[in-house]
Image (tube, rainbow, N blue to C red; front, side, top):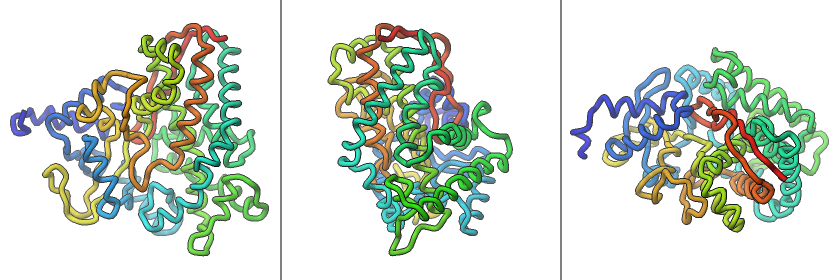
Length: 421
């Protein structure tokens, strides 16, 4: 159907889901809107307060093209969707040298240099050395699930703790600080969710970031004075062109590793288990064919898409699918939509644990491909390889609840009833 014959009001309403945190907690509405846009208006302009206008990129191929051309499409100054007021505060903080500036905020060549500081900790050799520990932790949390059964809230009691323990142990943080890191992460990524956010005002939300910085500034000073064999020391003592990172950049590095390093994996694990419960044929298939755990994990990651978007800003006048985008205008890379693109995935709304190839976008693409992708995959394979053979039965024991978000999120609560050996 030509775009000109489409009901404009319907298209505008569909495009507004990208600026509505509650839409990500209402999957039928979200996916219907995105499917409509992919078919009829794949690059809509969204002008919906309290956000500055942007163009939503809904097609898989366009997202890939934009991520591939990181000279034309820049992360700075708008790497994620935040309100106009938050944009202004972040810009002022960066100009003063006091703002959050993680890998997702940076462009090459500086991005490449900063990324290299932590990269060795996520390479195959380092992960092989970590595999035994991850397997031990997977068993610990499946044992915990058995011990607290026959019912639990899988998100709060299991899915949070396992990846949190892995990434914070890798950083070398003391176990007594893990609950604090979890709470700060919830507040950081849950700023749009009534249950998770610290407060309704921008000042209250910024306080979460200040608490993160205060904690990690102490960690930086400690690791510089007394280096240890952990990722925190590698970050604290990393050099860029012979100079150490600033305290703000060091703290920012910790924030992205500590928060995204566990919260996104929690979302994929819990959402993956929900998908198995709601697709019992696929659960039985995985039980019969445990060798499918690798492709099952990839499908869970596609299905849940924990990171909903990143933003890019045009460095010069350009266009996407014939839609003009001027220098300085921003695009919203709608990963959730790209991961359901009918031109890329056969039966995209079918959960298929054997799906191959699976060219999902959940880890991004190009120079900003997720630093911890291999670790997340390892954790999920270990967890489900431990869980599935021990699972006699499982069902929902209540209604799953999704977080309201425009950036990172997934299930807040997954009440289940089960029998586990």
